[in-house]
Image (tube, rainbow, N blue to C red; front, side, top):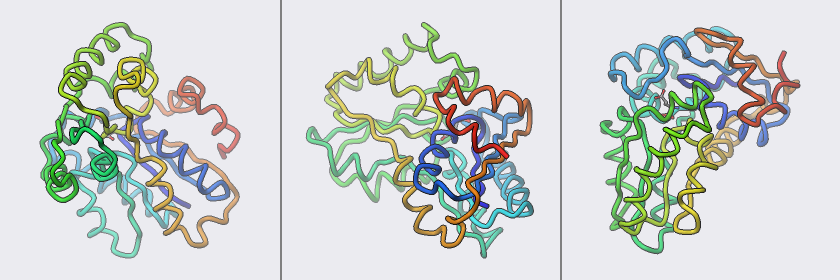
Length: 253
Ligand code: DGL
């Protein structure tokens, strides 16, 4: 079994890519909906949650873990690896490297939670992979909560998206990194504002390829999906069709 977790619904965007890459693997998805959003929480709290969820999944037959959350990866992937030395752990980090390689204008933006924006790990990622490319880090408070509430068409969200993205385009940014897995579900809204001025960069497929490399025999299971949540588990099932992931429902064991 492959364990995948996030603060809530965001990691389902990664899960969808994982299922595409590993259609016969068995997945256990855990949404920490009792503590969502992580983006406005302290590093200590996020670390505690990641270690508790990692323990839970490892005790329930998960032999590979995917931290389908940039915020949790930034705060706690090292601690999680140290706690489970025998379990491969795949983290999700903003696609600074591909964006910096592809930019024509030499200016990229990364959309993240407040916690990721303040993390040392993001600073190091930029230092190590952006080279001479200018990186604008844009925290987007509230966006993950809109996704969590399935308020994808809320006019207030659309206005905030426009208010944050337009100044970045004015600065000449031509690649916009989705540095939070919840934001994948806002891609249509973002695309409307961005038009042809910039491309959105999502790492879900790259994470799925990395997981595929580590999966070994876990790739050959029964193709099932187990959904768990620390609060309102029924909302997780109901969210699938709203997030255009209705096809995953047939796998639920
Ligand atoms: N989905 C998470 C991420 O990738 C965080 C959203 C939140 O809980 O604030 O960063």
